[in-house]
Structures are given as structure tokens and as C-alpha cells.
Length: 506
Ligand code: ADP
Image 1 (spheres, rainbow, N blue to C red):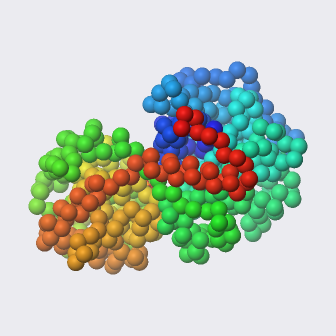
Image 2 (cartoon, helix red, strand yellow; image 1 turned 60 degrees about the horizontal axis):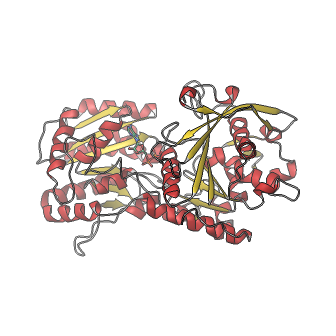
Image 3 (tube, protein in one colour; image 1 turned 120 degrees about the vertical axis):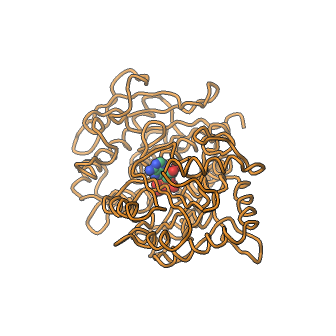
């Protein structure tokens, strides 16, 4: 199949979260399965044009109100995809929209005022790009609200009677990575999008007199999915649907969850370059070395006889930090005061939370935190901790719990979203489980579950070892998930009555 990924982020060029990792990793895996994959993202200011090739000629994109937007297009190959079937990455270069610091916003302006224009132009330009390179995809796969308008343009402007024949057999997929972000703006932005006002209602843009870009995409894409089966169910409920649960229930027949994979070349204790010594399920000696290195890194006394609880997280309410560090230190204060353990945290985010954490670290000798972002320290925390804490309020998929499992670090998580799909609660009688779970998010349930985990660590060494073994032998590779995406694409061809193309070399 010819697959075009439309995204606002892709590693190694632009990343604010798991979306960037997923788009590149899925593309690489699909190419390995024999499909022809291209990615298109905006050329942000931070992406060095010097390292890219330029497609000759400027590209004009007709928007609403008779505006023609001019842009340049750059391209390159995705690193590590080889010469035989490389993933080609295209960059839409529009100086006014993308020639600035920040992807969605900056410190001065947390959500750029012209985001609806920036990303609707980007989605429209995708079709011009296909015409320019004379390459029409079988599958247009859009990700999250910034790309959600692409399926709308396909359905209402391209795959229409009298439209470009190239897109007649193109099907569209929209993947939700986080339903909490929908791209809701004033209706005044709509004329610029160049779709008639009938489409405003037919495509589902209308949202209490505002314009909702994700909602329009969810109505218009041929199939929609999210990044774990359990999150797909949660988003259909009022509690987890961010006001779009009705839309998702309406699209139920075309909606599913596919678990993200992890990059097992980067996240693998047997070949991790960021830890002192590699280790595996057969020999955990390297994990002890990592624990010692972690304790030193955080200025904690090196001690193998005390459990270490690690956290690597964005400090936002989604991650449950309100209950963990909320008004005057939340449950973290009691956990560290009452229990014989050490706790380390790496993260950045909301100011109130950063300052609560700094206050806590100054009052407790067994709690240490680094505010910031560090790839190296995040690997060290995954390898050197005994437990990894993720009390998320909601979690579309979550990567850290999967990293923890294969690093032999037992996750302590709330039973929500992808966490519920990947972690199994410890059951001492049945001798099963890979982590410790709780249902309701509150300071006391975090406290109780951490206490349970720490008690087990001190008193049930054998059980802990067995749990580690079960976690470390799980398969979270992308290969499995990429095949599920191929099935999803095929089902979209079926519902659209289009004959699915055969995979290259498959
Ligand atoms: P989300 O995308 O909601 O932030 P995920 O668990 O899906 O959560 O992915 C977050 C990714 O970002 C993980 O790979 C995690 O290790 C990484 N990460 C988050 N905060 C930091 C940080 N401060 N330093 C290093 N890595 C971080």
C-alpha cells in the first residue's frame, strides 16, 4: 500500500510527546512489512533546512477567501530505513506559519492564535504535495487535531464527483493520541479553510458555536482509532470522552484501539547505552549496578536494601500529580515520611507542581527530584528503580510502564487507558501479575498501593522476582501493532467498497 502519514510531529525532527515517536516508529515498521510510506510534517524553524533537499518550484495552496498560500517543500529519508524501501519525509515550509519558535505555542503565547490557520493550511497543502510529486496515497493516515482536517478535505473536497481522480481510491484514518486536545477555536477561522458552510455542519465542525477540528476529523475519517483498546472504551463514556463521547459512540462501528509499540532498539536493557552495564532476565546483576548509579546520580545513599520508586513524567494534571503532589505535597509527603524507601523523579511542566516538588525535596531526605528533560537520566530511572509510579488520571497508551516492564521495574499504576491493557495486577494467591494497580485516583489510594508494593518488596522477594520475569519477557515490539494497522486499513477499503492494493513485495 502507499501510505501517507500526516502529522504535526515526527522524531527526530519535532517532538513534544509520544505522538512523534509513534508516527516514525509505525512508519518504519510498515515499510519493513513492504509498504511504501511517506510522512509529511511542517518545516518548523528548529528543523535545519541545510540538512534537507529542496523540491524544485514553489507550491501554491488555495485556501478560502481567494487566498493562495505559497510554500517550499523539503524532503529527506527517515534515518535507518535503508535504501531499498526508505520512508520519505516531506516538510512543508511556510515562513509566516512555521518560521517561529514552538510547535503549538511558545512561553509567551501557550497556544498560537493562528493555529487553526497554520494547521488547516498544512492539511490542505498535503494534497497539493501529492499532486506535485505525482504520488497518490492509498491510505491517508492523519494524527491528532492538527492533522484532523486532512480527512475532511479528502471527503468533502477531493474524493468527490468531479474531484482529482488520484484521490478516488484513497481511504482515510484518524488516530487519536490524546482526546484532551481537540483544536477548538472561534468560528471566524472557518472561512479561511475554504470549505463551504454546509460542510461546517455536515463534517461536524460545529461545537457549541465554536469550531472543533478534531471533531470534524472524527466525523469525516473512514476509520478512527486510538492508541490502546481500553482507552477506546473509556473515550466512549461521559467520564473519559472530553465531550466527544457521543461522536465516538456514533462512530462505534468504525472505531477501535490499537496499542502502541515501543522502540526496542532504544529501550532494551540488554543494549542500553545510558546504563552502566547491560542486563537481561537471565542475569540481573546489571540492574543492581544501575540502581547504585541512580542513587549516586540523585545524591541518595547507595543501598540495595531499600526499594527505589522512580518517576519520569510531564507534570500536568493528566499524570495524577494533583493527588500525588497537590496542596502541600499530596500523598508523596506521607509515602516518603512513613515508608522505608527512596523516591526519585525527573519531570517538568506546570509551575505549581515544580515548586511543590522542590519544596518536598528540601524537606525529605529520601525524596529527590530533577526538574528538566534528560534522555539519559530517564533510562537510568527505568533501569535502576525497583518500582515505577504512574498514577495517571487518564492515559491513552503510556510508554513508561512498558519500558518499566521490560527493564524489570515493577509498575505501580492506576487502572486506566493503556495502563490497564499492559499491566496486570499482582495476585499473590494465583501467582500472577506484573505490577500493582488501583482504581480510584486519590491521595489515599496512591498511598495504600505504594505501601502494598513496598511491603511485598520487603516480605515476598520470590514473588517480586517472578513478577520481574513475567514483565521482562513481554513483547511490546512495533511489528505486532503495525500488522493491526494494516488490518485497519484493509477494513477501511472494505467499508468504502474499494479494492485494497497488494503490499509491495509481500
Ligand atoms: P505522554 O506522551 O503523555 O507524555 P508517554 O508515557 O506516552 O506520556 O510518553 C512520554 C515519553 O516522554 C516517555 O518516553 C518518557 O520517558 C518521556 N519523558 C517525559 N518526560 C521526560 C523528561 N522530563 N525527561 C526525559 N524523558 C521524558
